[in-house]
Length: 330
Image (cartoon, rainbow, N blue to C red):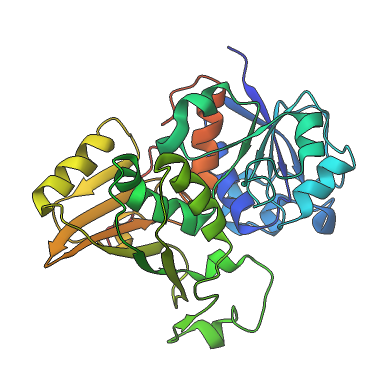
C-alpha cells in the first residue's frame, strides 16, 4: 500500500502542531503540504519548536493539490470559506476540525459539491466513518460529554435533565491571545464562560436525540476555563433509578470493543490521559444521582488524535496506528 499523502491547512495552530507530532511518526503517512498564510516560507520548527528534529519542513502559502486527505485546522468559518472558494479539489478527502460541518445538512451547497460530511465520533458511528469521504471532527467538550452519556441515550435511559460541569485547559481557546488566555490571567485562576449556551451543545443534542428519539429533557452545561494547559474533565450527573453496578455493566458493555475508551474502577484524574488519545470514564451512584466522570486530552481525543483515528478508519488502517502513545505519570 502506498503512503497516504496528507495536507494540513492552518499549520501554525495548536491542533496542527499536535497533528504533526502524530503524523511524523505515522508509518502509513507522508506529509505533502503544511499551509500557513501568516508563516509562508518559514520552517515549521520556527513555530512548533519541539519539532526541531524536522527542520526541513516548511510552511507553504498556497494549498497544494498533491494530498489525498486534507486536515482543515483553521478557525470556525474558515473551512466553509476555503471550500466555497474551491481551494481544494472536489475529489479529495477532507477532515475538518472546525465546527463548520458538524451539524447535519450545514452548508448544503458545499456538501453537494464536495460530498457529505460525517460526524466523526468513532464510538458513535464507526461504520459510517469507514465509508465517509469527508469528516466533521467533533468538538472537544462535545467529545468528552458524549462519551459520558452515549450509553445512557443508546439504552433510552435519559429520564431526567442532565447536569454537567466541565473544565478545559488554555489550549482549548486556540493560539490567538485574548484577555482570558494570557498567562497572567489564567495562572491561579478559574472562571465560568458561556453557561448553558456553549456552542458544542448543538452537536451533542443532535446526536443524543438521534439515539433516544423521545428525548424531552435538557442538558444543563457549565463550562470552566482552567489554569492548566491541556485536558478536559467533565462531571455529569442525572437522577436515575439504575443501580450503580448495573450502570457500570452497561458502560463496560457499550465500550467493550472501543480501543480508546476505558472504564475505571477508581476515581480518575486528568494526568492519566494527557498526551494520549484515550477517554477514561468513572461511574458512581450516590443516592439517587448517577455520576459519570470523563477525562480526555482536548488536543488529542478532543481534536487532533481523534482526527487521525478517523483518517485511519477512512483509509482502512488499524485505527490505533500512530496513536499508541502513553501519558505522563506526573
